[in-house]
Image 1 (cartoon, rainbow, N blue to C red):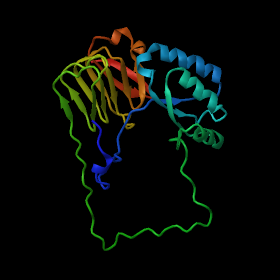
Image 2 (image 1 turned 30 degrees about the vertical axis):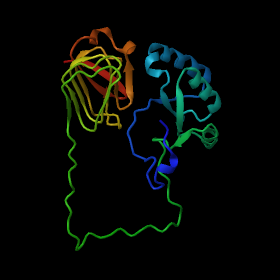
Image 3 (image 1 turned 30 degrees about the horizontal axis):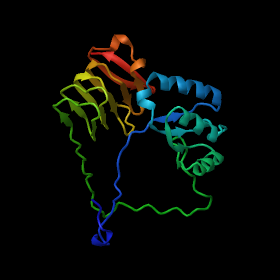
Image 4 (image 1 turned 180 degrees about the horizontal axis):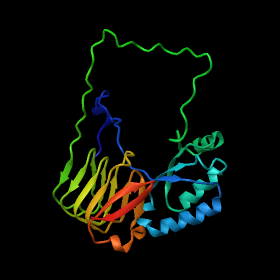
Length: 246
């Protein structure tokens, strides 16, 4: 049934902007050799096509500033993924990204801009005669899920996430803190999604499609058979996921 536009008040909001946290894989490039990147990218996608196909992806070209961005975008789209933006890189790469309708983001490795010589610096305020303010502690509650998480469901926790049941294949759980799973993990578990590298994943029965901490991940094919179907804890050490038996 269609709605007559004349019956809708002109001051009725038609949309709203809201901030949201979305986990997007980042392709960190280490050099500009496109043939090697193409070969390894295709091999990686074949290991877990259900994870990469139709997935949005952010490209970090800070260490590959000689790379032809146009060719790279064709390679990524040919692998079934959708580039949404470029992080870092040369001014030419960033200009090309804009021509390709991609977002341009500041690299996390770039140093802050220096102040021009002779710039007037603000005089810091003195604390004399000012009352001391005690910072307010932010309390982030742990989210506890008691029922099984079915395929297609996504759960997000701003703190720790505790799941007292199984996580089915095709389900995804994400937390800014630690993740505790007291059932079987068959889906995807992503801890430290805002970059906290000190969090851990605890699992009673590891059969995951994907595990990730602070953006560093392993797909099912990269998990050793000795760690499967056993209680484990997972942590990050120098950008590598370490899986240990509990």
